[in-house]
Image (tube, rainbow over all chains, first blue to last red; front, side, top):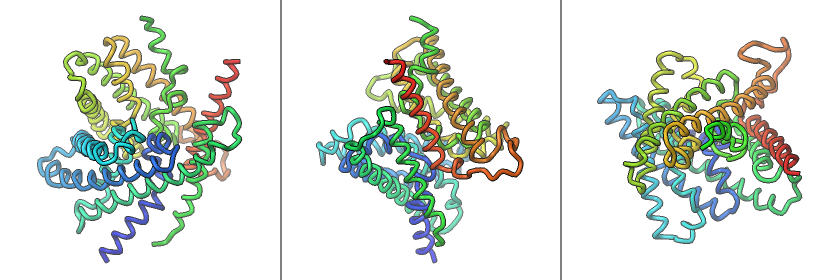
Length: 199
Length: 197
């Protein structure tokens, strides 16, 4: 039964409650890094990694430090510091492993810290009732994985469409952000269809 | 230094959402009703002004290579103040805004202003900058919420407008948010290109 519960969390965070297209979180990188497919993929994978790690550490800190010492109101500041540290770590790894990717991600790598989807998944983990139930930590990590994969999916779809939009004939005033938002709206409508899924 | 300009630039010519294109997540997510939008504006502007004040006061003693984590810690402190205050005095609003209250800490507008303006200027211009940017953010948010609340739930400030009419629920969901903002950005581009001519 627990396997099924984990699977439900995964599917619902990727499709039904997609963080970008249904909960409207993490729009800055979604708009900023979706011009080219390969940098979108790099960004997506970096976000998946940060989200999984952030879910793991913030859940442990919340359950075993903040709640027992009755300082749960410090949640926001504790989580954002953990995330900032993780992003710094990912940045150092990518800089050494793949300098090309590092340059193409440019300013957006340090900006994962201010990607509200990452802090969002950490905060939602503490509010989803995982704290008291069985396998809470595993569920939190799966939710982090699903959120990251959902973000990557939305980012890749958007990058694919925007590569085509570059060469399309668009009215002058719609170029740039307006047409991107219309595209995002249509994608969000398509993702609304997933809410009919029964799992 | 022209104080009046520091105040007004955030409202129109450097509007954080419509021109700079930052702070989109809270804008789209909480603009389902005008009252949500106004409370969000109040919360974000409070954090923006006070973080600008503190950043402009401590800018001389902050080592430049660790300034971002320090700015984030300052912002998070004020966000916690807002969170606890709303929870105590406006529990309904706290519930309606939900996760977007703690997420003020990652609102790009606030960190952006701390980094770009408050860390280079003195206290008074920083306050005016924060106030102007907050108003620019709030104005856009409120206009967006105005259309979404009327079309999406057939209400304004919680009062039903046309009894018996079925509202277009999609306007309160994510697609409606994207479409409405797209229309606003389109109108803004059209206005600006006409002015240039």
